[in-house]
Amino acid sequence: MRSGLCLSSVSSEAEEGQSEEMPGRSLAQSIKAGDVSAFAALLDRHWQPLVTYAEEKLGSRDAAEDAVQDAYLRVWLKREGLRTDASLRGYLYRLVHNVAMDELRKRQVRVRHAPVLVAASPSPPRPDQVMEAEELAEAAEQAIHGLPQRRRDVFVLGHFHDLSYREIAETLGMTPRTVANHMSLALRDLRAALRPFLPKALGTQDQGSS
Image (tube, rainbow, N blue to C red; front, side):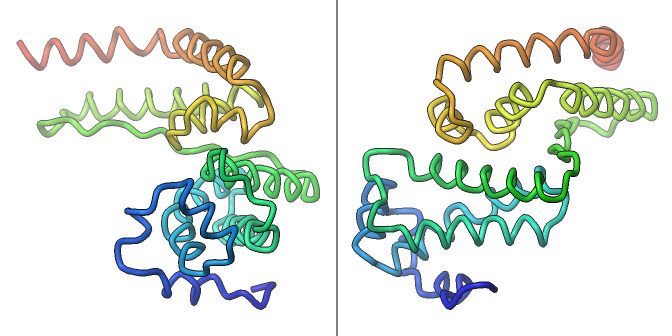
């Protein structure tokens, strides 16, 4: 811990249910006024997804937690200038993104990306289905990894972290229209990369349902 403000102890001070009930704008206004319980609610609400996002960038859970802690500390230390008319979640993601990029520049390492999530089958899969699903998952992960940096960042934030185009734009410092363009190009590239695998997977499902 690199600050006198202990984030774990702050989190325990949040009132029960506050992190779910207080809307983002009210939360920002309360934090701006120095309300520690509101800051704790913000911590509870976004800590885990932010750590997951930072870990995808940094490849280390410890480094990710340090990055998110730094981001939260910046929010608290600069709370008087906090904007109440912008997405607080988007602001946090932008801070974490910037901290992670600074760390990567220092370490000069490659970004590690989010694992591809494969939907579970409603019935126990056959061995050939398992193999094909593993091949598809590996191909998808490689395809995501092969996207250009900005295109990849937009896709990961949108599909793995559920950020809106506006929040992605705030995080990456671009316009929502540019985000939409990057997302469209990312989906086009991924569809092209995965096209050889999809007919086989669809054919397997059809055989199983007949």
